[in-house]
View 1 (cartoon, rainbow, N blue to C red):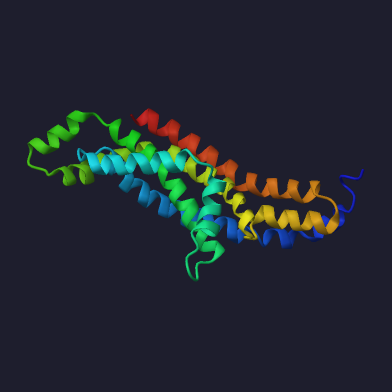
View 2: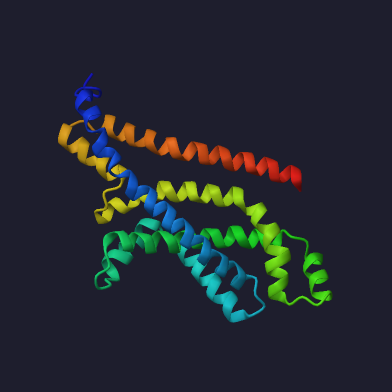
Length: 218
């Protein structure tokens, strides 16, 4: 009974909880787009014949995938203070760079899944390496990587909850505030979980549907 006590007060606090939704969605959208852009660059660097570019990409990917995202967020906010850089901007930087490392591996695997003969054929008819990538390889790669990239966006949305450690009022931070004010953490945290599920389940199902459709196409 104690768990559901004062639920009416919790329900009245729903608008306050929803106030954290714009932060969560904004971080997901901005970091997701930036992560895809940087991830594509890293993927191309990692498959490059240039050893220096490959080395830079390898170190970057290993560093961001091998350390906790929470630590990275704290480093960019506390340990690398940049003048006039807000907590939101620090969160965007950390989430974007972390996401890029995972996207890079997704795109690299997608590019390498395309038959090598297609690149050789494109080069044999006079295309440059860049043209072959742009017109032949990447269009096919995009189709194959949409499902795992969508799943990465879902993971990114959940990871935005970590930015509460630097004081950003996203969904979990708001739920914690409600719990502290009502002495009941179960109900607001449950409501926060439901909010995440409202967004993540449709995206996950969509990714599964696309994966099935594209596998049939292949």
